[in-house]
Length: 204
Image (cartoon, rainbow, N blue to C red; front, side):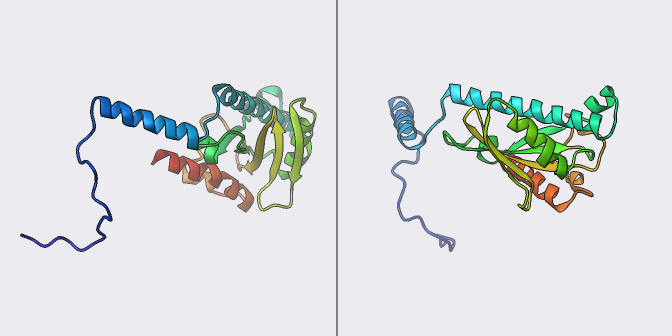
């Protein structure tokens, strides 16, 4: 008989080596559900729906901000300003759908070259301050990455900012492509790496 290969040995032998079936499977499944209910808090459907609505509204605000900057700062016509686009990404536990009730949402607003850090901390900040559902807004302009943190309908959001050196950021923009990092500044690269890394984890 060949000697067993060197390596770590299990401390305990498995109680069973065959897949459970019938009543035993149902009993194990029931035990797992009870354990999860008692030890792993799950957000209610109504709270999940509220988060989705909040992110949809934030996307609308962000894209409207891009549009207005293009109109006022760049003197574009309405068609060009609408085409400038802008995208909102999420990262962290919310993107992976493993967040706990009450957890914040990490998000990144990606804008074209016309919208810079200065506008992020002035006109976008003002739009959020004037929104009826936004409270407790703080601008952290001294951080390594631009960030606005606030509550919208009771949901805490950390909004980071990334500026791309292009005229438009359409819906088809693929931030997982490494080429997206070409010619971006350090702060934008750090912001983009949040959803990029989260997407890699999600695909595992």
